[in-house]
Length: 81
Image (cartoon, rainbow, N blue to C red; front, side, top):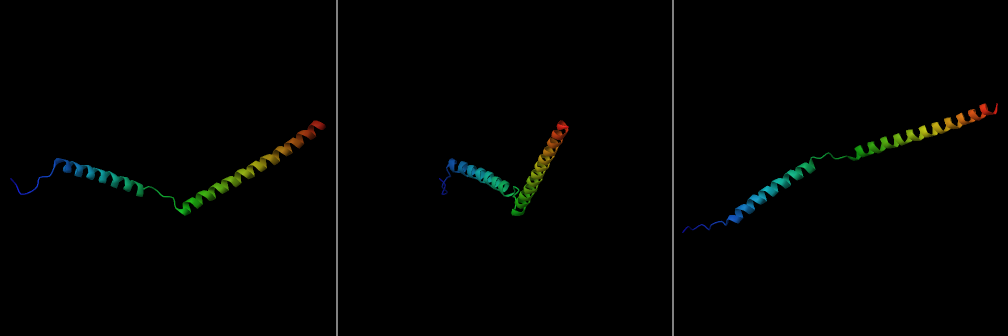
Protein backbone atom coordinates (compact mmCIF):
# COMPACT_ATOMS: atom_id res chain seq x y z
CA UNK A 1 0.00 0.00 0.00
CA UNK A 2 1.10 3.54 -0.62
CA UNK A 3 1.29 6.30 1.94
CA UNK A 4 -0.28 8.91 -0.35
CA UNK A 5 -4.04 9.08 -0.37
CA UNK A 6 -5.48 8.37 -3.77
CA UNK A 7 -7.51 11.07 -5.48
CA UNK A 8 -11.00 10.09 -6.37
CA UNK A 9 -11.58 10.32 -10.15
CA UNK A 10 -14.44 12.77 -9.65
CA UNK A 11 -12.11 15.39 -8.17
CA UNK A 12 -10.09 15.47 -11.40
CA UNK A 13 -13.26 15.87 -13.44
CA UNK A 14 -14.43 18.68 -11.16
CA UNK A 15 -11.11 20.49 -11.64
CA UNK A 16 -11.42 20.18 -15.42
CA UNK A 17 -14.96 21.52 -15.28
CA UNK A 18 -13.86 24.40 -13.07
CA UNK A 19 -11.01 25.25 -15.47
CA UNK A 20 -13.38 25.24 -18.45
CA UNK A 21 -15.90 27.42 -16.61
CA UNK A 22 -13.16 29.82 -15.50
CA UNK A 23 -11.83 30.08 -19.05
CA UNK A 24 -15.32 30.70 -20.45
CA UNK A 25 -16.03 33.35 -17.81
CA UNK A 26 -12.68 35.02 -18.47
CA UNK A 27 -13.45 35.23 -22.19
CA UNK A 28 -16.94 36.57 -21.48
CA UNK A 29 -15.60 39.28 -19.19
CA UNK A 30 -12.90 40.20 -21.69
CA UNK A 31 -15.58 40.62 -24.36
CA UNK A 32 -17.69 42.78 -22.05
CA UNK A 33 -14.80 45.04 -21.08
CA UNK A 34 -13.59 45.53 -24.65
CA UNK A 35 -17.03 46.47 -26.00
CA UNK A 36 -17.21 50.08 -27.21
CA UNK A 37 -18.58 52.42 -24.58
CA UNK A 38 -20.25 55.70 -25.42
CA UNK A 39 -18.81 58.52 -23.40
CA UNK A 40 -20.75 61.53 -22.19
CA UNK A 41 -19.26 63.64 -25.00
CA UNK A 42 -20.41 61.06 -27.59
CA UNK A 43 -23.93 61.15 -26.17
CA UNK A 44 -23.90 64.96 -26.10
CA UNK A 45 -22.82 65.00 -29.75
CA UNK A 46 -25.60 62.62 -30.72
CA UNK A 47 -28.16 64.74 -28.87
CA UNK A 48 -26.85 67.93 -30.50
CA UNK A 49 -27.08 66.35 -33.97
CA UNK A 50 -30.62 65.22 -33.24
CA UNK A 51 -31.62 68.70 -32.06
CA UNK A 52 -30.16 70.31 -35.21
CA UNK A 53 -31.95 67.77 -37.39
CA UNK A 54 -35.27 68.42 -35.64
CA UNK A 55 -34.82 72.19 -36.01
CA UNK A 56 -34.14 71.79 -39.75
CA UNK A 57 -37.22 69.62 -40.18
CA UNK A 58 -39.35 72.16 -38.32
CA UNK A 59 -38.06 74.99 -40.53
CA UNK A 60 -38.77 72.91 -43.63
CA UNK A 61 -42.36 72.29 -42.45
CA UNK A 62 -42.86 76.01 -41.82
CA UNK A 63 -41.43 76.90 -45.23
CA UNK A 64 -43.71 74.39 -46.98
CA UNK A 65 -46.74 75.69 -45.05
CA UNK A 66 -45.99 79.30 -46.02
CA UNK A 67 -45.54 78.29 -49.67
CA UNK A 68 -48.79 76.33 -49.67
CA UNK A 69 -50.66 79.31 -48.25
CA UNK A 70 -49.14 81.59 -50.93
CA UNK A 71 -50.02 79.13 -53.71
CA UNK A 72 -53.55 78.89 -52.33
CA UNK A 73 -53.94 82.67 -52.41
CA UNK A 74 -52.60 82.85 -55.97
CA UNK A 75 -54.99 80.11 -57.07
CA UNK A 76 -57.86 82.01 -55.45
CA UNK A 77 -56.86 85.26 -57.14
CA UNK A 78 -56.52 83.61 -60.56
CA UNK A 79 -59.88 81.86 -60.14
CA UNK A 80 -61.57 85.15 -59.20
CA UNK A 81 -60.34 87.03 -62.27
